Length: 117
Image (cartoon, rainbow, N blue to C red; front, top):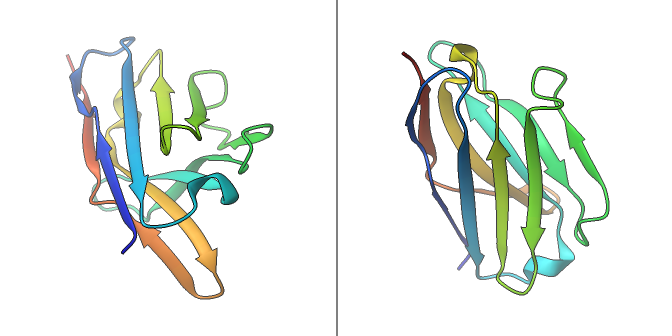
């Protein structure tokens, strides 16, 4: 079965950095675009970053452009999110996501990122 397992969250001071990873299994990873979403307390889940199946194209929410970088290693079935210059408003649970077919989406369990002094 499809599994997405995030890791790398934690507590960081404003201006600091964190690197998230999402290990995928149960599907042909190299064939699918991958996404990172986040959900802050009391807010809707939002798309943060996307990367195409081959890694040649990426997209970002305006709020994170220039600070967050999505990448992938198809040999390791892993997608990454490098987060720099973090702000308190980046505090959220971050989720790995893949859309594999019509009405078929998979999510990881999420990893908490807290930006606070």
